[in-house]
Amino acid sequence: MEYIRMENTGAVAVLTVDRPKALNALNSHVLEEMNEALDSLDPSIVRVMIITGAGEKSFVAGADISEMCTLTKEQGSAFGRKGNALFRRIETLPFPVIAAVNGFALGGGNELAMCCDIRICSENAVFGQPETGLGITPGFGGTQRLARLVGLGMAKQLLYTARNIKASEALRIGLVNAVYPPDELMDAALRLAEQIASNAPIAVRACKKAVNEGIELGMDDAADLEVRLFGDCFETEDQRLGMGSFLKKEKHPPYLNR
Ligand code: DAK
Image 1 (cartoon, rainbow, N blue to C red):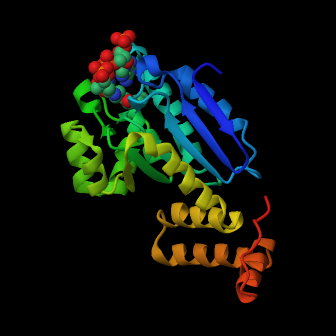
Image 2 (cartoon, rainbow, N blue to C red):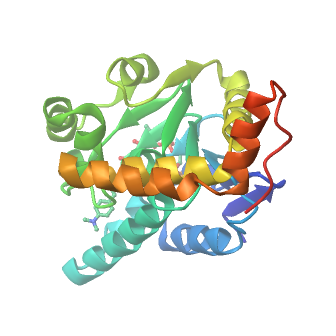
Image 3 (tube, rainbow, N blue to C red):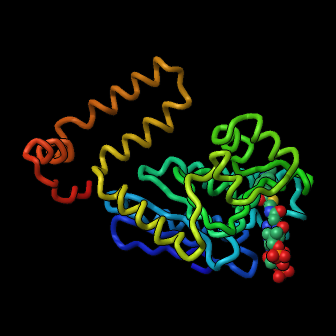
């Protein structure tokens, strides 16, 4: 692959968008390769994936403006569908995904970060949806996920003004969970990933499903979903191991792959 690197050392996979000359902007080729990279993962082994950008300056500086500028209406919709489908695929992967945002996360870059389960960033990160300044709307889920993450009022302000915000403001509004010095970001992401990967994979996956699907439901249906997923954990090896070790006052051995 030309623009995507996938390092998969077992439980933790790291996907790097590697197109630093264009600040890792997403063209069709990058989107296709990202899909290919996801195809290569074995979900019975991978427990957490980290997504980051190559270089020190940019996570992803958006969809590729040079590719988009000549698109017709139909081509624009097709491009939006392709990006939206990929980001939805990432959002619904069975295991958690962490965005390690190491610089610019603008437009499609912020949208990529937002389809991940957890976002952490470096002190030099910059977030924004600059699309209205370019004559378009966000097309990879930005109008939908931003409002869900930071609330309607703040999302609308960021979308209408096209204003970029720094890491400290992203932290304040809840767009990211933590900010690190640039040279500590990847270690922090890996530590977080290892911590998640050390827990029971069946339970972690069920939590992701319960939160993602439950948030779309009314409370009664959401509670039913939670009860079903809770029940599904019983009689699993993970549950026997986790509770058995606690009752024997022992540290449980590593959970096996499922
Ligand atoms: N696309 C293409 N090339 C980009 C790019 C981008 N988004 N961002 C940066 N580059 C390229 C620059 O053109 C430059 O290339 P060369 O001139 O060296 O060949 C190189 O990366 C370095 O950039 P700069 O020289 O500009 O670097 P600076 O440090 O001066 O500035 C910057 C960094 C991130 C502030 C600046 O590059 C910038 O403003 N970039 C554009 C950021 C942006 O507006 N991103 C949002 C893109 S719009 C939809 C589907 C999808 C979308 C919308 C609708 N539908 C189907 C409805 C998504 C839209 C977007 O993501």
